[in-house]
Each structure stands twice: as structure tokens, then as C-alpha cells.
Amino acid sequence: MAQQHETTQQRPLPNPGWGPLSALPGNPLMWVLILSEMVVFAAFFGLFAWLRIGEREVFDASQQLLDPVAGGINTLVLLTSGLFAALAVQAITHGKVRRCRQWLGAAFALGVVFCVVKVMEYADKLGQGLMPETNTFFTFYYLLTGFHFAHVLFGLGLIALVAWRISHDNVETAAAFWHMVDLIWILLYPIIYLLR
Image (cartoon, rainbow, N blue to C red; front, side):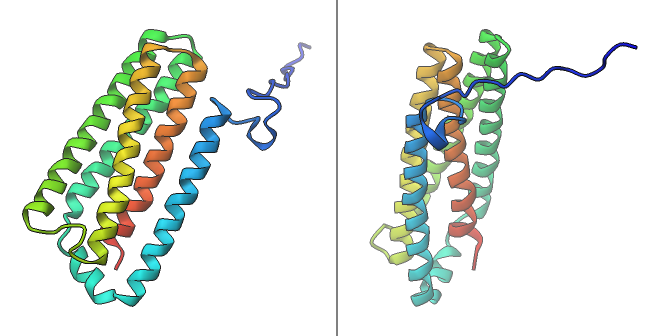
């Protein structure tokens, strides 16, 4: 009777010597950056919630002036872009460099769509006279979404660089950052646009 069990080999850690970061894909320094950025965003979210308690009427009235559909479209766009980044990692893992570049290109294109929608939204708000100094809500609206927008731009640059200098480690590193950008938006969208 033939043996039907597979021998499992312990895979080496991608980044030995980095303690708890040793098992994470990509460059460990990117994970240090990701964790620090998550702490910064968490502090902003906490401050936003605390200020909202003191100015509930202002926050609720200001939130009504936002377009949740534009934010929802951007959520779908960014999540789909994140899926494409994950597919790029899968492609490079299987040695499919051309397919990986295609997925990275698709992720990049949707990142650009996100930026276009966001710029149109900013133009609409500014055209209505809703500036960062309008009130506390709009100060945080521009601060939080603008900080996230800067991360999207950085992520787009990273994706373009990785598509040019393609390697398994580089693709995993860029995808990790891009997924952080996704995660922040998934938290940011309901906090800014939906929660009352």
C-alpha cells in the first residue's frame, strides 16, 4: 500500500533576525513604516472621535455636506486595486513576471482613478467654500483624507518602481504598503462619511 502522506518541510523565515517581523513578507523596514503609520492614523482617529463628542451638531451637519457615493466608489476602486496587488504577488510567486507587471499596472491604474475621484471631490468642496478652516470637522476631513492621499501617491510611486525593478521581495513589499493604504481607507471612509 502506497504511503499517501506528504512530507512537510519547514519553510525558512523570509527575514531571519527581525524577531516578530521575521515571518512577514517583503522588507521588514516596510513593516516598521506600516506599523508606525497605523499608530499615527489611530491617534488621528481617536482625536477625531474625541472632538466629535464636543461638537456633535457641527460634525453631523458638516458630514451631511460630503458625498458618500464618491467615497463609496473610491472604496470599491481601492479594494479592487488591492486585489490586483495581491494577484501580482501570486504571479511573481509562480515566476510569471509579465503577468505580475500586468497586475501591478492594473493596481496602479485604479490608484490613479482613486486620486482623480478624490481631487474632484476636493474641488467640489472647495468650490462650495468648505475650507480646512471652516470648522473642526473640515479641518479633520482635509487632514485625514489629505494624509491618506499622500500615502496613495507614495504607494503609486512604489508600485511604479517595483514594476520597473521587479523581484519577489520588491513586489511583496509594495503590496504590503498598498494593503495598508486600503486598510486605512476602509477605516477612514465610515468614520468620516457614514458614522453619525
